[in-house]
Length: 76
Image (cartoon, rainbow, N blue to C red; front, side):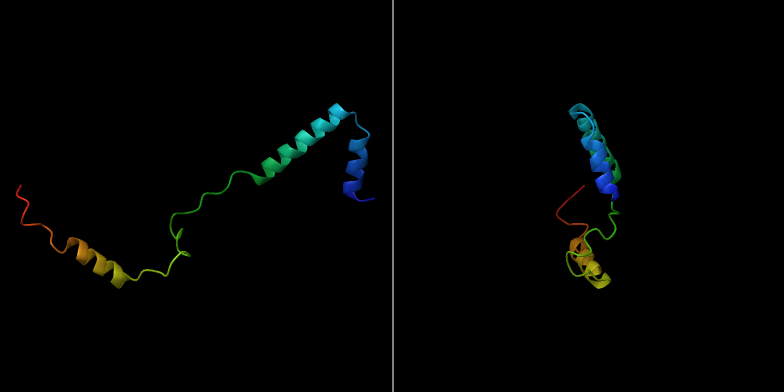
């Protein structure tokens, strides 16, 4: 007799109220076993979504963003 069959036989011998308690306990164990999902590090979170960005691309974006800083049309 397997473990599953032994458990099933024992549960079938219980009254319906106790069977419900066993079901509740099994659901509790399943929930506890799953636990809370681990938080992933934000580093590399999107790494698989697109090709990696090179250092040269980052430098070019910075030059484009800060190329006209400070602006001449804004007077303090």
